[in-house]
Amino acid sequence: MFSFIFVIIFFSIAQHNNTKVDKIEISNSVKDKVHISFYDYKDINSLKKEYNNDDIIGYISIPNLISTPVAKSNDNEYYMNKNLYKKPDKLGSPFIDYRTKKNDRKIIIYGHNSSKYNAPFSNLEKYYNEDFYKNNKFIYLNYENKVIKYEIFSVFIETSDWYYTKINFKNNKEWFNHINKLKDSSWYPTDALLNESDKILILQTCSNLDSYKEYENKYLLIIAKKVVE
Image (cartoon, rainbow, N blue to C red):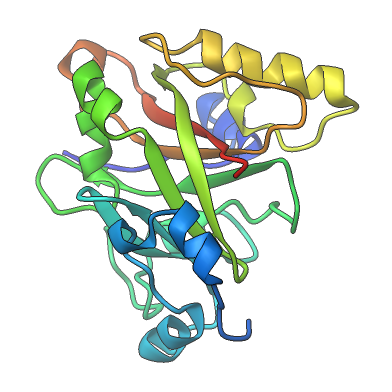
């Protein structure tokens, strides 16, 4: 069965309760730091022209796993059933949470998964395997004219608590408690150390794991922290 994502907390809770850029330039030193030869780099302006879509704001890459443009709309519903050409498509397109602002501590990217079709985030299910995680710890996001490297620190499936979609935090202590809760939820230990100045990336998609089939809502979360180099 084709799996759909559940978007931001407000939409998620309602459903659960049945209530209805200029050219990107990367210096040679930065290229070395992010190992650009292994990163599937795409120019965002070129992608906007290719798809005739100014909503394209980024490009996400996990080497040998995922490489795809990312859009951002005025809500978290439009790209659930539209492709990057803005045409109807049940596979949708990966998109950044519309609430995200420049320099936010958290970026959430949503994408469909499917057991039958080649959905954008289907390959994320390979992270069920701890050995796979150990060999694929890094995510690269070209976002707002900058390539950012992230290190994965938590992998798990959430079925009922949408706390991870929270965007605004009162202070650093609340933020630090939040990201530590995300790490504590991980299925297996990770080497990444967290601090209150960390910025994070969350990838969300539906899970097709058999052991979770009894749950109506089951979302695989891949959570990573920005690598400061």
